[in-house]
Image (cartoon, rainbow, N blue to C red; front, top):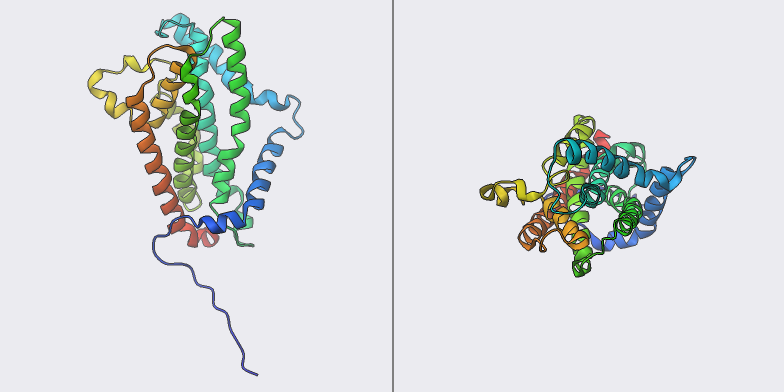
Length: 274
């Protein structure tokens, strides 16, 4: 009898996401999202309270330090609302990037034992953080009610702003997790880097403080358009900043597409270096 031998070789060259394969593995994707949510709240005394503690206490500290002591402007609204409207999307972004960056390292054992589309791991981390985002957004509406502050019609653009926020987190997350599985320095540097990035976005100050000649460069950070858009939609601080939003959308799509290409290019070595 003639013996047959099957040889499995890694794909060569640059490949984009195989959407058909992702659909085939959708049950695994849903499971990883659910597991991520369950692990976060399992055996926790505060439960979903952890979703609001981080932005809420950051808001209190920022209100005292930047609003009361430093007298930073807040576009005519109470500084607590001004900062919390920025902290809701920023906290989601920061936590999603951190979790997705660590996703491959955290599942290193699984990478070497079974095949599945690896990009499911960072994408599941980004999607799971939406639960915390929705809870924090609900608290923001409660604060707005407490201050008798109604949202504007710009709230209809929130889905677009949320899409930009998620694309940015997914794009940076896929880039960094593909690097972190090979260079563990990335994982250790994330806390420091995310803290620095917060001051490169208008979280504690309005974007109008940035000199006019530098604003186009400043707006290359997609979170600038997202945060200023949230404030415009929910607090009516300024007209909807379409210049920031359109530029941010272009950068976010670029990050997501190039991140997916780079992830797929490096995917063949993940099991070897994990």
